[in-house]
Each structure stands twice: as structure tokens, then as C-alpha cells.
Image (cartoon, rainbow, N blue to C red; front, side, top):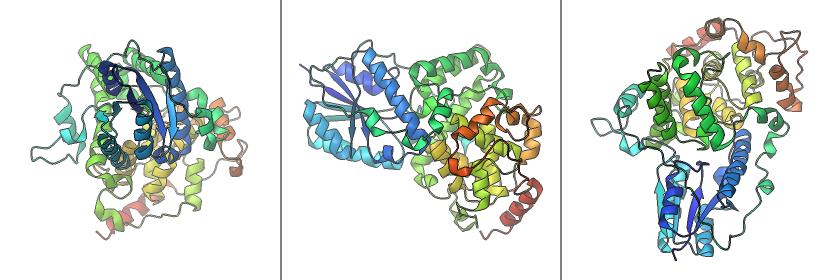
Length: 471
């Protein structure tokens, strides 16, 4: 009989289009899925760690429906994965690749340890469509600008998504598993978990439904509606893509079909998928994007790095006095996500009007977003700050007031998320006060604040600093 195969589950909480799982079934013998809680999991922020816990519970149920189980273990992967393989007599360990530097180092070590133990170790593509080392310029270098990157991959063939296995061969004797509830992955969310939970679309089935609904009714007008935060005009798939509850290839092929059907916004949707791929391309080739200014000459720029200053506190609390900024920050605290236009506005305001370091915002998003993604988060913040690839020019300082007039004319967005200006606030605006730390001592009866930095004042200050920068 064929020996068991361990399938090391990471950010790929789905059964369909799962190359490692499919290969394990094809190998024959029992398939034993395992998820490992290691330092990378423990280091997650409050919201993404909580969302991971929900995703694991849902995925475990999906496996159970196939007669399988999700084995949970804790510890250093370099020790735990080889030890578990030995424990169950596995002849192979399969997984889908990760691309951040810490995961790459870990996976390389695990593969070496398994190989030394005469266990087949094999990784597969799954979190991306175009792996970073497969996309090169004509000079054999990596791309530093998005548009040429898009042009180089838009006509590439993407393999058709794999069907979910019809069954998963079980082992006669399952190894012991830790209990998910004992991990307490949602502990740091505190009372915010109950507020955010209704906005979560959990698991593979929900992700596929989201994709189908978007392609059926929203993608045709996506070019226009994607910039309007007051309406539901986007795919909302970011939280599912972040945990691999749906694959980018599944989204890509759905977008291609929509293009063939003449739906005008489909190409723009595909470009957004490739923007995500571009973020991973840059993270792979220049991992400093996660921790340092991508444009190294920006190291000398005099950003404020005091996370405890009054301006940063007001920004985090959605109390800047700038309605677009405050509405977006509160949306994130209530839903765990933020509209893309809002992300640009709040990032621009923090780094340009308030002259605070983009690392402060990157860290806050890392703690608050259920759709947190290391590559997209880093590139988005550096793009907004001006220190990254394809960055907004230093002289492009979004005016959050005129942006609100342009993209939220009827104030549907701000009225949903701000309570102070309204005699009968929206329920979602009130939910914010049920989610925030009690130590903030905020109430919907508070007066709405005056701007901590007016748009015109902040813009002038930013332009002066940029024009006089010492590089």
C-alpha cells in the first residue's frame, strides 16, 4: 500500500484548485491535512489572526464532509513537520508555496530536513498565477513598474482551475490534534469580534458565491463603481483571497469569461488581480519593501515616527475632523475591511498631511484588517507615501474634501460610518462604539472634531518638505 501523504495547509483554505491536495490524492494512500501554528501565525495582528481561526474552523468542516480531518499542531515547522511525517509513516509532504522571505526561509529548511529523512517534499503554485521568477523584462531583470508588468502577463495562459477531489482517502489511525479553541486565535479582538463577524463571508462556498454574484451583476459597471465607497460596487474578495478560500486563477478565468461576454469592467478587474501579483513580484525580488523604504533615497526623509503622538491617535480613532478619513477608519474597525478609495485617502492623509511614517499605517492595517496581505499592504502604503514602486509623485497630495465631493456626492458613505453629525445615526456608525477599546472613551454624543490639520495647510507643509528633501 502507498504510504500516507501529509498536506501542509497554509493560506489555501479550499478544496478546489488546490494543487498540493490534488497531487496527494493522485499519489494514492491516505491523505492527512495538517495546519501548523508557528511563529508566523503567532505574529499576526488581531484581526487577521481571528479571521484565520474562523477560516480554519470552516475548512476543517469542509474536510470532515469529505471524510477527512484537519490535524492541528504547534511549534517550529523545521521540527514539527518532519516529526509528524515520521509519526504517521508519511512518504511525502506536499504544500503550496509562499513568497514572503520568512516563509521562504522556513520552507527551504523544512524541505531539506524532509529530504534528509528520505521523505518526498514537494511544493506547488497556488497563491499566485505568475510566480515572481517567471516574469522578466527583456533585459532579464524584474519589473519595477506596474503597466509593463501587466502587459507582459495579460496574454499568458493560466491553467484551468482544478476540481475539488471527489473524496479524500482517510487513514485508519489519525494522529493526535490540538484543539482550535485552545489556540484562542481571536483573543486580541476582544469585543470587536462580535461586531465584525456579521461582515465576514466565510469559506470557499461563500467566496465562490461572491465571485459569481460580482460577475453576474456588478462587473459590467466596475470601472465606475469601484471608486464609489458608498455603494457595493467591488468584488469584496480580498478577505477570501488572503486566506486562499478562492484562488486567483479561479477569479482570473471568471474575469476572462466576463470579457468574452462583453462586460466592460472585466479587464479592469483582471488588472486588479495582476496588481496583487505585482505586489508579490516586488516582495520576492526586493523583500525590503516589507520593512524599509523601497526607494532607498527616502531613508533620509523626515517623517514623524512617534506612534503615540496626538495626530496618530486621532487618525487611528477616526477623529481627524476630515470626514472621508474618519469614515474609512471606522469602516475598517466595524467590518475588518476598507474600501480601496478610502485606503488611498487615509494613507495619503497620514503620510502627507500629517507627515507621519508609512510604517505606522502599515502596522495599524496589519492589526485591523481581516483581508491583510503582506505584499499588498506594504506596496499600498509605500505607493501612497511616495517611497515605493509606481508611487504617487510627491506633488500628488489627495485632497480628502474634494475627493469626498467627487466620490461620495450624496454623503451616503460618511453618513453610514459617522455618528456625530446625525440625530439618528446609522446602525453601522453606532457599531463602531461597541467595537473600539473602552479606554478610548468615545461616544456618539461627542461633538465632531475640527480638523487636526486642514487639507490646504497639510498639503503646503507636505510639498515644502518634499521640495526641500535632502536627496
